[in-house]
Length: 297
Image (cartoon, rainbow, N blue to C red):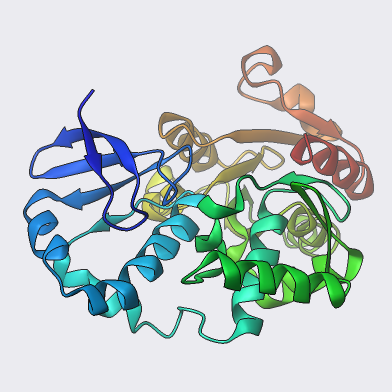
């Protein structure tokens, strides 16, 4: 495999040519993932003045790391550097940089107290958009003194307060988008909205309801809305015909689909249970527990 110098994290990394772009695999900018750079941008970025590189490249590395860690695809050109560095989304203060580390630990753990390994620190100071390892260590010590995280060797754990701060600082945008497909039944919708959506959100998802009547076809579902999600929950209660199409479309995009149905309608399903294996539920409380167990695995 071809190897090349990553301009942003200064590592030698494997690349895969892809048309006019190169895909950089598994460097500190995107551990276990990749980012894509326009091939013609490599030379002009490499020829930037040293002072400008010191100001910009570590920020771009952190930007790539954060987005790819959130399962977003990142493509960079030389013309993107200024807008990335000057974006209001880039943390500047020590407090904001510390929050990015808390958010990273939150994304990778199921709850407070779960140990997350970060090793070596010298390859991870882009987690806080820091220009140096020294600043990252300072931020870790500060968060530890504030009782927001616990450091034990190479493992890090969010405290209860650290978990709360991570969620509050990230906001809904950091939760994974989740679409719930269901029939347009007002009572059913209210049950889900009040009893299930908060529980699904606790599992790291930002759920949205998409309802359809029994008479509407699959054309009423927005395929673009479906494609933007990390999880689909399809409740067959009420048997909206478009729901089967929308859920099938999600499966075609490799988006996980969880099927559910109220027990009172199991015998009336137009598709046999063994074909889709839905969760059969009697009460919203029962379904909430089952879904939380499923989503926590």
